[in-house]
Image (cartoon, rainbow, N blue to C red; front, side):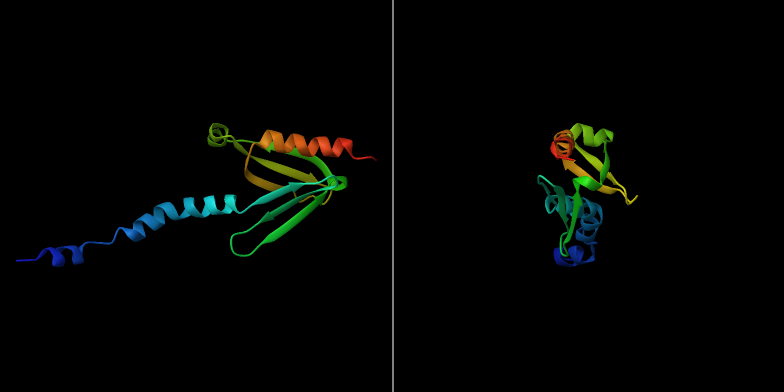
Length: 116
């Protein structure tokens, strides 16, 4: 007859299953929580990364267009993606930013206020 300890020892661990299921969500949440955005009078700064950091700065002079996109889930939770299109041709994507309309408006306002 098997004891309770022997029965539990043969049961598969639920921890790997939980990591496989919840791991991507936790990683994505950490990515979003470690992102920092700053708008100054001359440029936009984007800092991101969990372990290693990447900092990108975009001068308002280089910005050609701003595109806001939201899927259904982002609309429900109030987040969205902003594409910053520059003359270099490679867009900078700011993913899952909270209050995307306000962020896009703030950049647009600063671009319009900048003396030419």
